[in-house]
Image 1: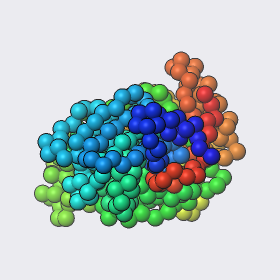
Image 2 (image 1 turned 135 degrees about the vertical axis):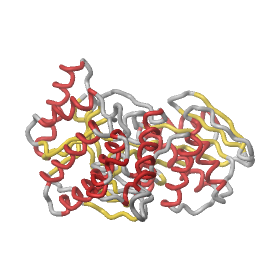
Image 3 (image 1 turned 180 degrees about the vertical axis):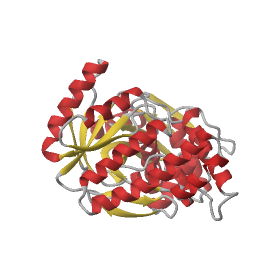
Length: 396
C-alpha cells in the first residue's frame, strides 16, 4: 500500500508533468559512533533510517532535466549538455551535481522529469543531503537503463557534494544510504569501503532526539575542520612514514609529536585519532553484547566532539546531560556535522518510552521547545519503493 508521501508525490508529478512516474527512495542515517572520521579515512558505524527522500521520475526524449520539489514548490529546468554548468547555490545543486558527475563518470543519462519529497528533516544531522543525492542518482541511472553499482553511486554522489555543492563531506552518508543492511549497523572502513554488519542487541533501542536547532553543513565551520585535519597530516607526515591521513596515526604517535603543531590543530587531531579507536572498540563491544561499554564510548565521543573538535552546541550538550541522568540509558552523544541537529541514545528497550517522555519533558522545561523523538530499527538502503523499516514517534 502506498504511503501518504508516495500518494502526494505521485499526484504532484501528475499535475506538473501529466504522466506516470516510477518511485525510488533513499534513506537518511544515524551514526552510532565515529563522527568526523570518514574524511580522515577512518571507521564509522552508521545504520539507515526509515525516514527517506523519495524521487518520482519519468524519462524524456530530450536531454533536459526538470527537477521539482514539494517542499520548495518550484520546478527548475537544466540542460544535461551544458558544458559550463555552475551551481545555483540552492537545493537543486544536490540533484544536478549528481547528474553532472554521473555523466562525467561515463554514464549516458536520459533527460528526465523528477519530483522529490520526503519525511527526512533538513539540517537535523540525519543526512538529508545524501538521501537527496542517492534517490536522484538511483532514479536517473535506472530510467537510463544503467546497472546500479551501489558503492560506485555512493562515490559519485560524494564527489558531487564535494566539488559541485562545495561541502567537503566524507563518504559515510552516501555509502550507508546506498548500501545499508536492514536490521544491522555497518562498521565501515572509509579507506577501503569494506564494511561488515554489527548486530545491536535486541534488548536495546536506538533513540533519536532532535534539538530542533538547525545547522548548515556548507558553512565555513564544517570545511574548516577538514582543513585543520589536513594541517595536522601535513605536520605528522614530515615526522612519520606512511601518513596520508589521520587514520595512519596512533594515539601514542600523536602525543609524541604534539609539540610540532599548534594546540588547536593538535586537539582536532586528538578527536579524530581517539574517535577512530573508540569506533573500533564500540564495534567489538557490540559484538560481545557489552552495551555498557559501547555506551561509555559514546559518552566519550560526545565529550571529544564538544571539547576537542568544538562542533557541539548548548542544546546538544543539554540533551546528553539529561540522558546521563535517566535510568536505562547506556550512552548518548551528538550526531552529525554538529552545531545542532540530533543526539543518538542507546537505551534499554523496556525503558525507551519512559526515556522519550522524560527527555521531552525536561528539554521542554529548559528550552521551551518540544523535541521530536523516535526509535529506530535499522532499515535497508536505496532502491525502488518497497517495504520500509520501522520507526515511530514516541514523544511530540
